[in-house]
Image 1 (spheres, helix red, strand yellow):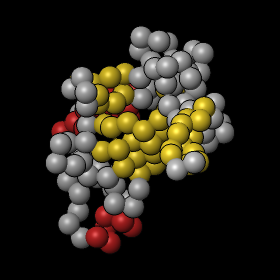
Image 2 (cartoon, rainbow, N blue to C red):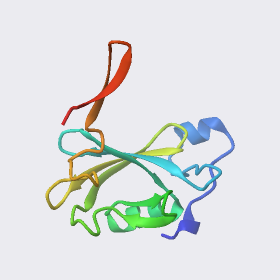
Image 3 (cartoon, rainbow, N blue to C red):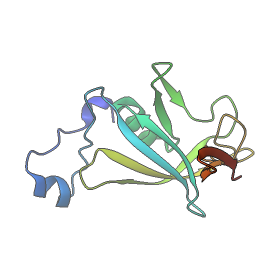
Image 4 (cartoon, rainbow, N blue to C red):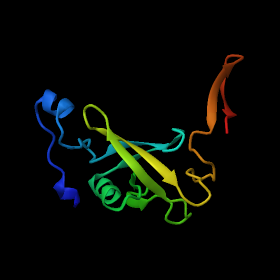
Length: 137
């Protein structure tokens, strides 16, 4: 499947929300949001973006690919670190403008570039009139 193979989203809401065709709706920059969780325990690992090519490569290979907005390039997650994300399942939301990837991470199981399992390792806490970040592991 190539990036050109995605059908346009149906114009009628019922078909989009209740139909069986996967017709991802990319935003005006050609991206959709990807929420990534660990397939074994549901831990939120990261949120990223995919363009049509990244989504196609993910579906073709079973390895997660994303679009780096800062580098403006396709990126195979874990290619340099060895912590590849093996896709177990792909779900889409009701209006098909976001996907949820359930993955198993190879290597040392780190997803974040900081070496942590998840990019969501800090919790926001309010106290004394200020907000601060607390390491939540």
